[in-house]
Length: 465
Image (cartoon, rainbow, N blue to C red; front, side, top):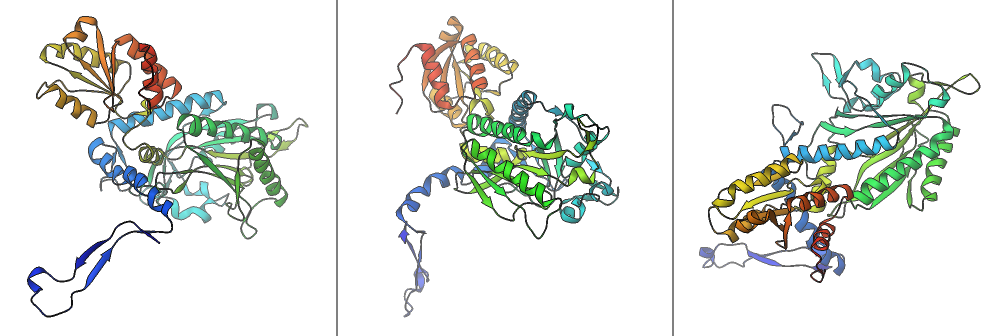
């Protein structure tokens, strides 16, 4: 065992020392299996400790109220981050051939019974007794109704639906991180109806989307595990189960990805791939899934007309790659600390006038960046020294602080500083807006943002560690 620290505490108070008795000493400390565990503990703990609570208090991240138990209230900044995520995902869905659908939030309880969901997941359904209706827990049934209102031809498949709706669950599903238990969640829930010969291609497209969103954009490391059939509890043809499991496994291996196996861990209606990422605490969280469903099309009697003019059963792929928005923002905030990437940042720009003379110019600058859809704050009170106000501004961790004074007014520029108080120099407003747009389009990191400004000034990067 490796000990990190030790603190001793006496069992008796000072005034009791005169009493003739043996004092008891208690030792407090932390122990680790090896030295590497001791050295790796402080950094992730410093990042994660109390961060979500601080965000709730200082940034209006999310808050809950007894008036609507389990339903989060979104602050202005987190709503901005959610809208940015939705915009990104929608643009990618258009490229991948998805059609956006809007499904109801309440259904008759009879909807869940034909295909077994009521028997298996009734405890997760938030019930409204007065209305004798059930709140939406997933969009699968609604999308099956969308598909089933007509029988398409085999040439129309695959048919893809995406749905950015509100779901309700009562099992604390959004609480893998320091978030209060929530039963009201904002989630992207997508489904693909395809022919059996199209499964491999659709899985390939899903993997490409995972690589883009989580590895290229969010810079996360993705791990996948395949949950296979349980012989005790499964529905459908065993041959179809084995065939779909083989397709999932081969497609991941073809792309050079490691796929862990969990024997017998699949739900009763189809094989499943769990997508996991590692948080700063060293814990892995299941944040998405790709699942083949061989039973729901049977329960809803879905079909398509094949090239032989006969009716065939489609395969349903549940594609929940993006977790509930409450969960993904909690993961990102824990991963980034207070240093969010510019394209998703809760606080992108802070405008700071040097003196009262520059306040009108600062107001114009703030309006221009607000009109360009950036999250802007400005402090127009010129109280205290400039250094103190700059320090306070940087303490709120905006990506960039724009300082404007008499010189900037005369030149029509702004003085750009980073959240680490690195002075990048003067730039015109058009230059800054052009750089900001490129940061959003390229999903740039802080380092890449600073490099771009330095290249614009023609400076060397000797200040990099």
